[in-house]
Amino acid sequence: MKSNIMICIFLFASVVLLNAQEISLPDLQGYKRSENYPVYTSGNLWDFIDGAAEVYLSYNFIDLHVAEYTKGRNVIKLEIYKHKDNTQAFGIYSSERSPSFRFVNIGAQGYKTDGAINFFKGRFYIKIRTFASSEKVLQMTEKLALKVSDMLPGESSFPVALTEFPEAGRKKNEESYIRENVLGHGFLQDAFRAIYETGDISFSIFLIEKSSVEESRKTVSAYLASAGLEIDDPSGGKYVFKDGYNGDIFLSWKEARIVIITGLSKDQTAIADRYTSEIIR
Image (cartoon, rainbow, N blue to C red; front, side, top):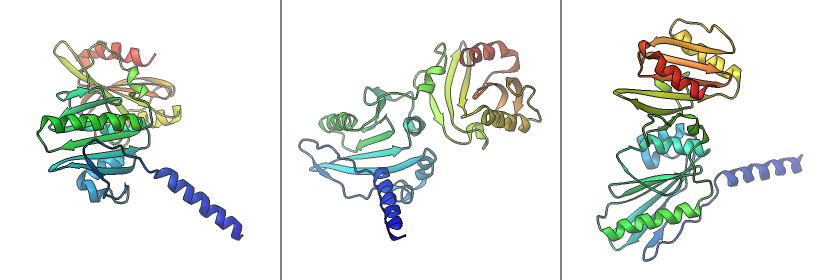
């Protein structure tokens, strides 16, 4: 009995250590590195980012490492957020990204804005910022970003699901991943979104991949029920209906894949069908 208890304690400790692995942060020439912060987890993330913590937690946040690099009065702050996987890291990154930012080739993608460099790689979302306006300091923030990107494990790539979206008319750097409450509905989760323009028409396409046909059917059934409708064919189908929050909805599904299009009116069904057919074959 005693040996079994000791084995359980050892296994539990191993899991904890595995999930909270230390990160060896790089040095920055001429700067003193300090790590006088705890490793933040889901239990105390509010202590660091307060009101924003809930959003980060919704994207399956695991832990956060923070460090400061100081040279005289100049300070560069580094934050490394670890999430469950690449999709979750992209999700939180995309929620804070704007197409108006200046994008840089760091990690899978990064951007600069007002003394900050943010990027994601693998399951990590990295934020580096300084309040200094000196060009030399700003160059050092970019140098630190490159060092961190080289140091962290994981592929420098976007989630594979984004390759399913048609290219024609897709607005660059406006793709996103929404973890919860897609279109304001609690039953819609885990959706990739791309925004399109064709002529003077703007619309959004949402792609949801479920783990099984049954899960997909439940989601579609819940959405249709909210509009007073029912599923006609248990293996898939196409529907057009009115959503009180979002106007006309074009919903198509087949097996485990669901496509939702918003921003088009019922007389623009041909556009919806054209794009849907490229995603659901």
